[in-house]
Amino acid sequence: MNNQADSLRLIVKQMKNSLHAQINRTKKGTRVITISSGKGGVGKSNLSLNLALALTDFKQKVILLDADMGLANIDVILGLTPLYNLAHVMVGEKNITDIITEGPHGLKIIPGGSGMQELANLKEWELENFLTKLSKIEGITDYLLIDTGAGLSKTVLSFALAADELIVVTTSEPTAITDAYGLIKTLCRQDYLGKIYIVVNRVSSPKEAAIVFNKLKIAVNRFLKHNIDFLGYVVEDAKVGQAVQDQKAFIIEYPHATASHNLYSIAAKITDQEDKLQQNNGLKAFFSKVYQYFR
Ligand SMILES: Nc1ncnc2c1ncn2[C@@H]1O[C@H](COP(=O)(O)OP(=O)(O)OP(=O)(O)O)[C@@H](O)[C@H]1O
Ligand SMILES: [Mg+2]
Image 1 (spheres, rainbow, N blue to C red):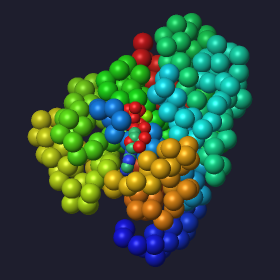
Image 2 (cartoon, protein in one colour):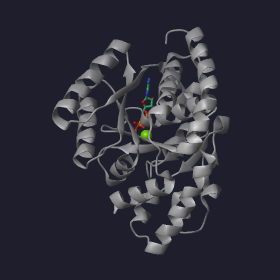
Image 3 (cartoon, rainbow, N blue to C red):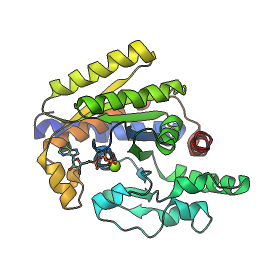
């Protein structure tokens, strides 16, 4: 994707496809996609937010769950200060719809807060109530994107293992690649059967991204017997840092920046996967799985 015309053509094509995707998804339920990484600071939160916004531009309904408990990344990137978070839903003080924060372009954001820590302490009936409340968002969204922290914490692994689709973000730094492999290895050891996509961030060229992906793919195929798919790359782009400084999403502030074009390509690949996906078991089943892995 090198120029603006290509980008516009892609958007028009996606608009046409989105109706088809919409009809299909009504049958299939909300797509849950977790975004994780082995190493910290590789660009998960920026990818999650801008991918969510690119999907809303493709007329998809998206909720972004900020599951990086404690650090509240998405809030900071957008300069939002939500009053309530998942923990308030968990203890029964709020309904899920009360804690949804309206982001730009119709994007909805659920702040995780300290949610997961409290999850372990719920009684059986409280958990059932909580899961029922969470599953209410099934009807209002096509996608649930989950931005997690980095590494192998219980929270990260629970959200990754429970999702049907996982995006692992890495840069081309050797430590980031090694840690991405470490994350994938941990998931495979726990019998993760879902799809694993790779996004290579902060590259200087598409070739650099391809080299990183191939290194990972060879190792994952050979030693873990799992497949991974290349979802795309994002170039090193000063506009990303600038938007973070201004607490704005770069895809909105700088829609013609190369990083924004990269994000539209990634979003297009995500929607193109639609037909290949099996029917999923719904959000209640997803969150039950998160809980099982977490305890
Ligand atoms: N493509 C890019 N080009 C330039 N800078 C980038 C790019 N992607 C990310 N950055 C920079 O890296 C910083 C970290 O990004 P981000 O907060 O998204 O990472 P993260 O993986 O979510 O971190 P954490 O592990 O702490 O949650 C951003 O503030 C931004 O300045
Ligand atoms: Mg983050």
